[in-house]
Length: 171
Picture 1 (cartoon, helix red, strand yellow):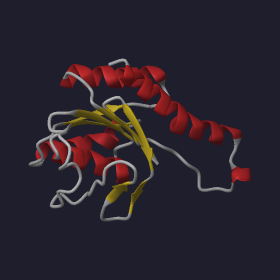
Picture 2 (cartoon, helix red, strand yellow):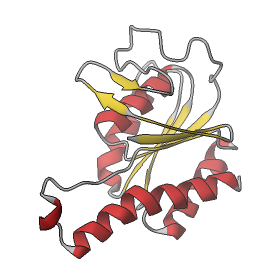
Picture 3 (cartoon, one colour):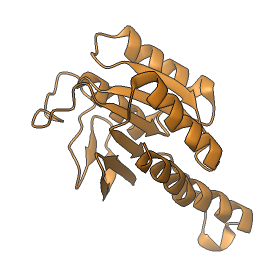
Picture 4 (tube, one colour):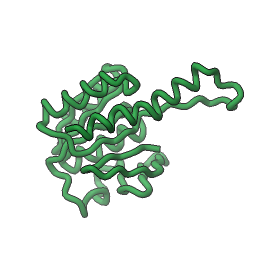
């Protein structure tokens, strides 16, 4: 599940990836196929700026590419810079109208989330969308998850959204 914060409206919906497309229920249908123009044609997002957390692969990567295809300047971020650099490079070297900036950010760290938003505003002059896509889970029975494992999941999935969204609201 990803939460999307767009122009002071918080949207929470289920997001799935079936291999050929990313579907955001309750939000906007976003196709990862560039030739399909169904995602944001009814909305004007050209020139907007978005942060997509957890955007090195899967759903986050698909959202970043789709938004860039629609003219949105995107900030792709993850805990490891080397994992998001290729995403930004691919967007910037493509024919997509949106520009990409790769930043390292551990969303569990409040100061890192603040620095992420500040760097975005400094580079692009504002922030219109926040896609809280960073998330964690364990493939284990509930009884087998350690207290530290549980804390890690809550820190990323709950506190990460809180840190990023609260900071974004102050821009």
